[in-house]
Length: 506
Ligand code: FAD
Ligand code: DLZ
Ligand code: SF4
Image (cartoon, rainbow, N blue to C red):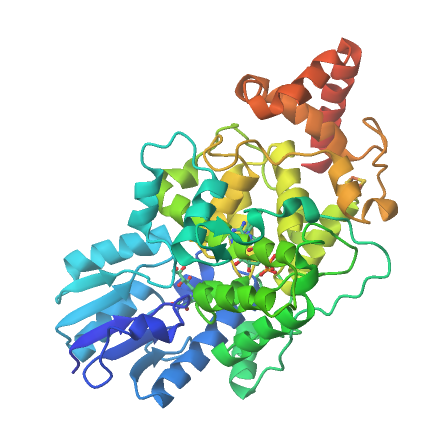
C-alpha cells in the first residue's frame, strides 16, 4: 500500500523529480521492458546503457530511503510493456494516485492520456522541471511568430537564467562568438577524449543479458565505457571541462579520421537520461569562464548548445507533434541505403561516420548533420526512415531531441519551420572541415561524372529537383543564380549523373 505510486522512466533518472514526493508514504516504480528496447531496434550499447543506469539509479534511491518497485528485464512476471507494468504495479500498491512525469516521447504522452482514463485510480502527469523552458512557456513564445529562430529564443533564455549576463547585456558584449569558432583541426593536435568507466558487476550482468538477447540489433556492445551513475556522469563532465572545454568552440565543427570525439563532451546521453541536469551543466561550464580556465568563445558556444539548441528542440517537438513525424516537405521517397547499417561504402566520410556509430553509439553534431544527414537530404531519402535510423543508433536519442534535429534541422521535412535553409552541401564543405577526402575513393575536386565525389553531383541535383520549393528562399538566391548560369549541357550532365549515382548507391 502507498499513497502515491510515482512512475519514473528510463530517461527520468534525476532525484530532483521526486522533490514533490514523500519517502514515507509514496512508492517509486521503474521497469525494464522489451517494448521500450524494441519500438525501434536500438543500438546494443543504448539498451545496455539505459538498463544499467536505471538499475544503479534505483539502488541509489533505495539507499536514500525510497521504496522502489523495480522490474528487471529477466523477471518472470515482466509484462513486456509500460502500460501493463503500470497497471499491475497500481493494482499491487493500490495508491490513491499514480503520478507520471512529462515523458520525452509522444507515444508515451498518448499512453499516459489513455491510462488517465482507464486506470482504476486517478493518474496525474507532472511537469518535468529539469528543463529551463516549460512546454507552455515555449508555446507562448512561439505564438504569433512567423519564424521560430533559435537565436531569438536563446537570448530570452540567457536573460531568464542570467548565465553569462552582465545585467541586461551579454558578457563580452556579444551574444555569439561563432566567428572565432569552427576551424579545421590542424595536424598535431592531441585530444584527451571523454572520461571512460569500467563496468561493475551490475553493468556486467546487463551486458551479458543484452549480448544474449539483442544480438540482432545494430552495433558493438563492447567495449562499454559509459558512465552509469550520477557520480560518474559528473566526473565525465568535470573531465570535459578540465581537458576539452577550452578548445571546444574553436574545433566544434572539425572532423578527423578515426577521431571519434575531438573536443566534444559526450554528455548528451547523461543529460537526456537525467544523470546530469541542464542547470548543473550550465553552472559548471560558465564557472570555467569566470575561473579563467576556458575562453568565452568556447564557453558561450557550449552554453548555446545546452541552453539554446537543446531547449529549443524540445519546445519545437511538443509544439509540432504529432504531425511533425509524418512531414515530408521535399517529397523525398528513396529507401535508406543498407550502408547506413553496414558502413560498407566507398564514401570515406560516410564510412567513418557509420563505422564509428556502430562501435560507439556516438557521432558528433557535424558528422550527424553534414555527413550522414546531408547525404540523406541531397540523395532524397525518406525523412521518416532517416529519423528511425537516428533514433535507433545513438545512445543519446530520445525522440523529443532526435526528431526535431533529424526531420527539422537535417532533412528540412518541416519546410523551414526550424531551419531557415536546408543544411545541404557539396563535398567542398566536408573537405574544408575534415581530412576524410584525402583518403577517399572519390575525388572531391571532380564536380560530376565517374570518380567524382557523389556529394557534388547530388548537391546540384538536389537544388534542381527541389527548385519549385526552394528557389524562393532568400538564403538560396545566390546559389540558384549560380545554377542558372551553368550552361544547359552542364546542368544536364549533373542530372544524368545523379541518375547513375541513384542506381549505384541507393
Ligand atoms: P557537444 O558537442 O559536446 O555539445 C554539448 C551539448 O549540447 C550536447 O551534449 C547536447 O546536450 C547539446 N546539444 C548540442 N547540439 C544540440 C542540438 N542540435 N540539439 C539538442 N542539443 C544539442 N542530440 C541528442 O541529444 N539526441 C539525439 O538524438 C540527437 N540526434 C541528432 C540527430 C541529427 C540528425 C543531428 C544533426 C543532431 C542530433 N543531436 C542529437 C544533436 C547533437 O548532434 C548531439 O546533441 C551531440 O552530438 C551530442 O554529443 P556531445 O554530448 O558530445 O555534444
Ligand atoms: C531507451 C529505453 C530503453 C532501451 N529501455 C527502457 C526501459 O526498459 N524502461 C524505461 O522506462 N525506459 C527505457 N528507455 C527509455 C525510454 O524509451 C524513454 O523513457 C521513453 O522514450 C520516454 O521518454
Ligand atoms: Fe566524402 Fe566526397 Fe570527401 Fe569522399 S570525396 S570523403 S565522398 S566528401
